[in-house]
Image (tube, rainbow, N blue to C red):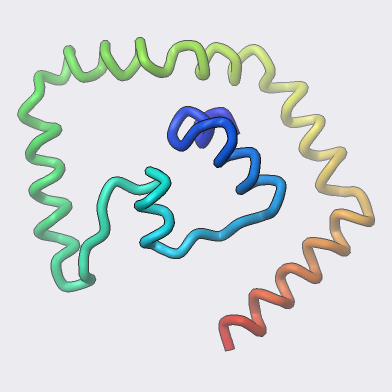
Length: 113
C-alpha cells in the first residue's frame, strides 16, 4: 500500500485498493502505475534502452538516491513487519474474506474464458 501510494498518490491508491481495481495497460500508464507501454515485439528493445539509461548513472549515486527516496517507507515497513503479517493472516483467514476471494477468483475465471 505504501509503495503504491508513493507511486500514484493517496487518493488513487485508496480507490484502487478499496474497490479492488484492476487497471488496463493504458489506464495504468495514465495514473503513473507503469512508466511506458510497448508492443510485444518491441519489449526487449525498449527494456534494453531503459536499462541503458539507468546503467549510465554511477551505481553508488543511484543507490544513495534510491535509499534516500525510499527510507521513510522502508523504515515503516521494517518497524511494522510482525504486526502487518499478523494482521494480514488474521484478515485473510476469515471465512467471509475467503468466501469473497473465492467469488472473485470465479469471476476472473469467467472473464478469462
